Length: 276
Image 1 (cartoon, helix red, strand yellow):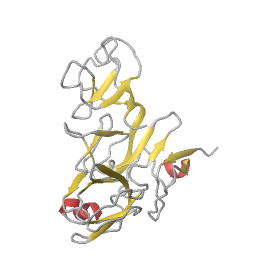
Image 2 (image 1 turned 180 degrees about the vertical axis):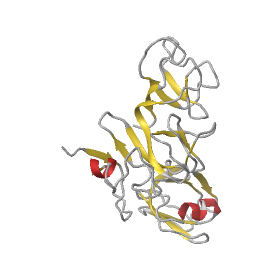
Image 3 (image 1 turned 90 degrees about the vertical axis):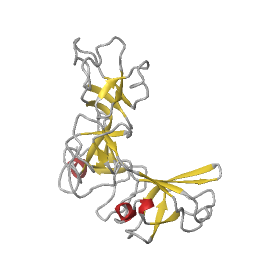
């Protein structure tokens, strides 16, 4: 039987965005054949929109991502340099009901490195405060725009508050567009299934059973110790609410099962819990 996998907001060969809830793709096109991108492969040309969601039969969830620095299996991969405050603000006023905003493509918006390629920022987000209300919208599309030109950013929902020209805004890239090996001030967005080299696209796991490197010996050997957090290098440690170095770290998941007693007894097999 030809089984189906599901990818959210997949794109076709012409870069068209499917805006339905889910886009069904066959096993041949998603995990095999020559037209898709099998989850154990990496490619220099994207086959899906960044952030496309793939769910396997056992409940494991994967997201399509781009590495800006090489990331490896067994370690959480973080996102890097994905946020900019647009100090110049919106180029033109926008009315209630509008589904786009316009910015100047320059250093404050990430310039051509962000908007220079068509739909490079698709799947990212825009935040526009109006008084005490902040309008938060997803970026659907935009044209390729050179530095010094205005870029029209199309949104997933209409504006519910009017926006004046020069109104300050903030833009965030697609969270899956800039993977790197981790850091103390960045969040893990997934665990690579295979090594994804700089400039390559691949799948990272965000939910379900997986294997992650424990940062220290003895993780999981404590009675009742189940909750896991990511540390700066993308490895895992046991959360300790009494330890200021771990109690506020990013939640990674929990130990999936108990085997024999010992330094490396329980992890690295964990139930990953980043994005279901």
